[in-house]
Image (cartoon, rainbow, N blue to C red; front, side, top):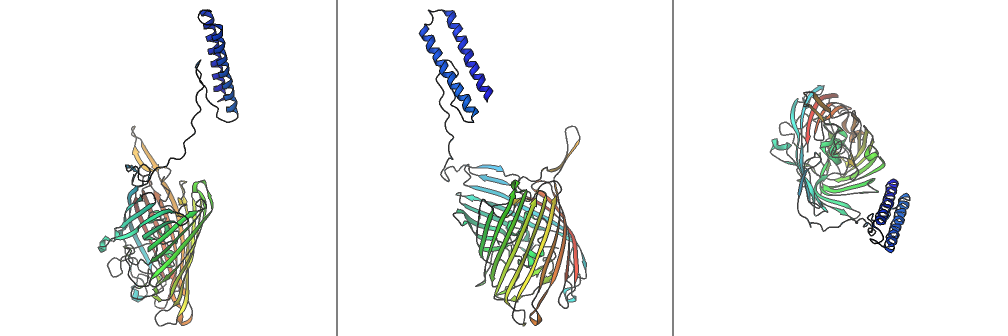
Length: 532
């Protein structure tokens, strides 16, 4: 900038010399000495202004620009930048449509006070099994044979967005239960946001505020393994959804979050429930003591707790004030949760279970840890389920504590990192964030006939899980069994829309009650997911 200002000064002096020579050649009759003096005086003022501008630039301030044309007046000072422009909500109701970052169609008004995202996801699973001492019928101490096959794990249609700026909605339909002539619900709610202190309130079929695995507080489209761990299905009651009111907000520059819900249990997966006096409450708090490089380096800590009164997911509807904790193999053999055991092709048989416990109250406590360092991700949860004044059959009344957890590690061989949502204190609904892999997977021929290819993103993951459904002593003891799980995954993210998951899962149950065999299941599975 300094050399430009100096050049301007030289040009002005040059023009002054040229003008002086031209006027001298025209003679005294063309211009008087007084006129020449006035012109030179004006040029001297302009030179002084240029010198002041150069000095101001050297000091890092904006100087007032001046005119270069001889005889011109100094230019007016530049107008100050305009402040944020305010507009009335709904003042512009026109609409534009765009493909939203590879994630579906987005309709929005120019001021984004009205938005709508249309999308969905589908997951097609193929599984094959091997069993050890568990393929016997249940009457002989086994769980029955696990069937090889393929099925639609999830078929979801999504419509979500905002209206009048402070209202929001999400309608996710679950069509994978169509073989049982029913349509289920994923998230299905309406909400209002930007409420001081409270943040957001949602009403409807909402996520239960507990857990860190993809299908708990986030979405089933961003899971590392094909299914959640036995910890989530047993200790957390397989209750990733509930019917009620949900509250949530973030604070401290999104370094902390809270979420809470008061609800009725969701036993059917379609948002319907009728049973007098059966309610619950759940809350979750998260913190980010470490967050760097836009989430490529972070540490997440979480704590959740809840209370249920009456029947909860996994209980028996005919028995009021009861709860059942149970776990299946960590890979399904047919239809998704929500189908009833009486119908053909139900979900995988139960590995361990407490049976129906009649109780006064049920309390949950869960802890969470997530550490991301570039392509490396470490994730763990451990929790407890406290059953107060419980009774099984005619056994004496007692209180019980069941516990479990999992530890998972993953590594992106291609350098990407798992995405995190600071606003909700959970993993992003898009596994690698909206940007997808660094390079999409493709293979084509170029104009010269040569093959060009991209590799996408590749992830290796492993998971160990532990669930203990044994508690109590003497005649009041509950002997539901203990199950360990080990899983390996190789996931290929072709782009931000398509994922191919390859799983191997091993589950071993032991410390079983009399008449139940200890033994293992192991299976391999592949899932193809398309989301938009």
